[in-house]
Amino acid sequence: MKHLLEISKIVTKKKVKKIEIFDDHSLKQKNSKFNEFYELLTNGALADDKEAAAKLYGSSPSDDKYRQLKSRFKKRILNTLFFLDINQSTNSNYNRAYYNCHKEWALVKILLSNKANTTAAQLAKSILGTALKFEFSDIIVNTARVLRTHAMQEEDLKLYETYNKRCEKYQRILKAEIESDELYERTLLNRNRSLAKVPQKIALIQSYCDRLLELAQTYPSPIVLYNQFMVFATFHEIQEDYNRICLVCTAAEQYIIEHPHLYREDKLAKIALKKLLALVHLQDFENGQIQAEEYLKIFEKNSAWLQFYEYYLLLAIHCKEYSAAHRIFDRVCEDKRFKKISSAAQDKWNTFETYLCLLLWVETEDGLEKPRRYKQFKVKRFLEEPVIFQKKQRIFTVISVIAQVLFLLQEERSGEAFERIERLKDYSASLLKQEEHYRITQFIRLLQQLAKAHFDYKNIGAHQKYLTRLIESPIKYRDASNELEIIPYQHLWEMILNSLDDENE
Image 1 (cartoon, one colour):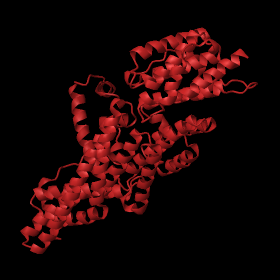
Image 2: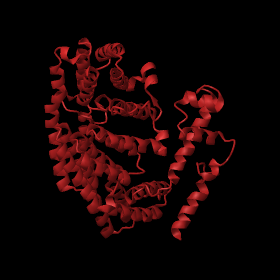
Image 3: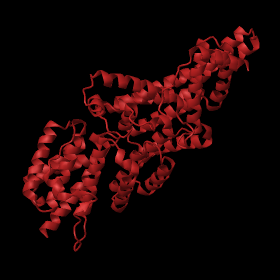
Image 4: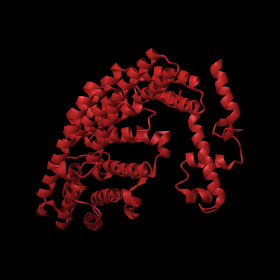
């Protein structure tokens, strides 16, 4: 009871008249600008302040009414974060515990700032018990410090030493976790930079692996081990050793099986994506299909669902399992979430659709009617309308024009195909960087040689070196748009030559 009395005194003196949050009751209120703003945001109907001000008030973002609404809206939505429903099935026990610990830790700080030390210590003790179970080092250190101070105030030397030892132990673990975070982040920074200095990168990331191994052996906390798994997987990725990536990811998955209370879906999803992408590079459709189907069940409601489908689709296409690819694409389109994906994701999946249509168009057996459309895709419109993507997505302009070349060759419209290849030549000079777009530039040069020979392979000039470069520089896709190959360029070249052979028969 004394703790309730202590809390009630604080609340009585400092409570607000009304707690402004977004809950089911408040969102049912009609004629509310707050609710209108909320609906527009959650439906993805607003791109920026200009659009928001125009839709809400028919004004500019500098309008006082809009600025005041936005400020109050921000406070309300931040308040709502303290009342999230974390008991949903999509949240693991680990994530629920972590959220609750941080929420209650905020209460401890509020109690301490209002001199409610005894109540704060009681709550800190409860948080510490949960934090120890799930190995939340940062929370353990924070709560142990509060309890150590409280033990000093109570002149309890035994308890003081207990909490001091716990604090010292987990300070060392926390320091190791912070260092492991840095090593993982530095690995990602080096991975995402230019591949020009690969030997130096390998040596540097090898040193990170060695240090992480030392940390994991001394402080095998979940955070240190996760960072170790990811850095090792990235190290093998840079070396293009995809079998070892699979082994590392399998070891990480086994760790979760052996420690189910530490299960974190967001971390496991990243590991699973690494493994699935490695199987794409290995072109192992049998094992990749098994893994993809398993992952799509495990991560059915995870935000990475679309990325899992992307890798699954690429696996099928790269392995020439085209029937499976069409089925995978249909599953994605039928998902209710597909209508709400970002514009950048829409560009990517529209391009996937183009190439799937191309596969149907080019590979239709003799005697069967060529399909005129793939879902809403129309070949005629695709060939006639200009291909334009935003600056950040401009690689899709090049990829789409390549698809146009194949459609035109299939329809024996060589003059228009020649014009598209000239356009690709210009793109290669102005948009593509040799280092970042190596494979696609080699393929464009192949097309140029074919165009010079008026699409007669018998008369083609020096082209073998470009084909050899493609073969000797395998696909390296790490979810960067400049590395994306929907149909591998060697396969596209084969399709073109087969198409030309059919024309000459």
